[in-house]
Image 1 (tube, rainbow, N blue to C red):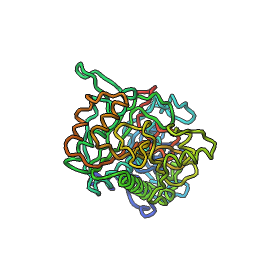
Image 2 (image 1 turned 135 degrees about the horizontal axis):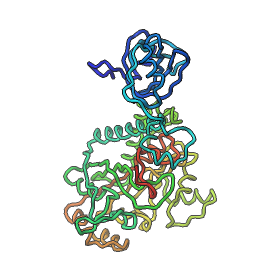
Image 3 (image 1 turned 135 degrees about the vertical axis):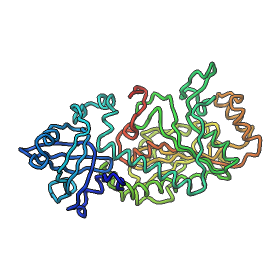
Image 4 (image 1 turned 180 degrees about the horizontal axis):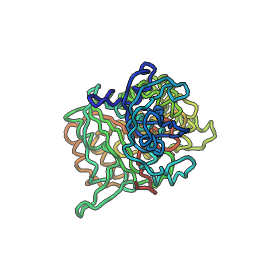
Amino acid sequence: MESGATGWSPISRVNHPERVGERVRVRGWIHRTRSSGGIAFLLVKDATGAIQVTARRNVLGDEAFLQAEKALVESSLEVEGEVARDPRAPGGQEIRADRVRIVQSSEVFPIFAGQTEEFLLDHRHLAIRSTEMGATWKVKAEVLRAAREYLDGHGYFEMTPPILTGNAAEGGAEAFSLDYFGRPAYLGQTAQLYLEALIFPLERVYSLTPSFRAEKSRTNRHLTEYTHLEAELAWAGLEENLRLQEELVVHILHRVARERSEELRLLGRNPAELERIRTPFERMRYEEALRELSARGFSLTFGQDLGTAEERALTQTRQAPLFVTHYPREIKAFYMLESPDDPRTVECADLLAPEGYGELIGGSARETNLESLRRRLLDSGADPESYRWYLDLRRYGSVPHAGFGLGVERLVRWIARREHIRDTTPFPRTPSRVTP
């Protein structure tokens, strides 16, 4: 998109064969630089791409040429000149500059190849400028845009539930507690309980909020703060919930493959792999999963949860996501509906990403019976009095309903083929890191 009356062009619009011979104006930052005699070659980048700029002393003049030649990586600049063909340049075109203005010179940039992960995390505010990270942020933005597009287009209302809560929805041990004017409060682990309240006036609702888990998990798929896409739908059971999840995920995958194919290829993901994924996703009951895992050498018994190794074994060779359904009641949250055909299990499902990337979504049909819910709260060690307002939702005209929570960073990690989840968010929060 051209930038209007100022005449500045995004680099992605300039670096095309049809622009050869045109006079253009671009601005950005120096990505690489070298000089030879009276010629300086500057690879200039902006948010849309990069292009080679050739600056000659006999065109710019001594002073302007010297400034351009001496400018270091990450110096900001403005360039004017003519687009010309050059098969040696990235993209096949270059700008032959007749004006280069250094807007602000950079000091020696401290980020370069071979540095330790800790150093890069300490300097995350600078490391996020890399081409690879920039591509990841674009993919993530497309994921969020596609999710909203699908849900808005299917009659869901986006809500703004609170982050500060008076009770820990899924267990106090994993909640960050704080003093709220002399009273205990928590950073939200989920918006689910509030979204359940909102189905009564609106029926279909969702939210995109940060969620917090005080887990000291140092794995490649855990963050203490992450982006949580959650939805609740009235008049629905498990199957309606699964259909919503798989259709939403496929919509996101196809949108990202279509709109961010260049970034995906840079990150090592062939967009065609995402485009091939279709609904319905395979469904496998928990007990079936145990049998498959047993055949692969795992020795889980009924009632044990699936860990990272088990999820990887189930999905390593699969090319599409897999639903594992009907987990044992005792290892799932108090609000999940007991299965009518097997009181040992609940009407829930985890959606596992293919290629061993692990859980993306957890969801269930919700328990609507007041006494059953109260009993489950007591069994979990919670005080029903702390959930009085939530129990009111069952006292006053409840209906069958279901919902889910999707970890956005986990989805991006799979789509963008990132080894570690910290590389799916600009400023990751982990048990050992809260800065920058």
